[in-house]
Image (cartoon, rainbow, N blue to C red; front, side, top):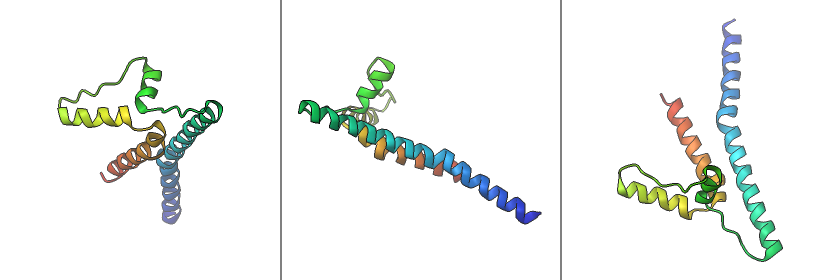
Length: 110
């Protein structure tokens, strides 16, 4: 009985780990590849690389630009630079999965 319960708990933990960590990371990377694919198609079609930033995506979703307002000027500048300058594909493929993984580790470490 005890062994079965431990195995079941282990299976539940693996499924939860997949659903809460691995799946969002895979979807994020897939979204990044879709963005790069769209940029490549535009380049092949028009001969111009259409740069997409995270700011462009936020503007498209919410209809207004994003401005960081943490109250700390240095942090605001770093956040604003990363939103304004970094590629949307970079956000999806590298930055968001790292942030997601760090949050997961913080939750599990409790």
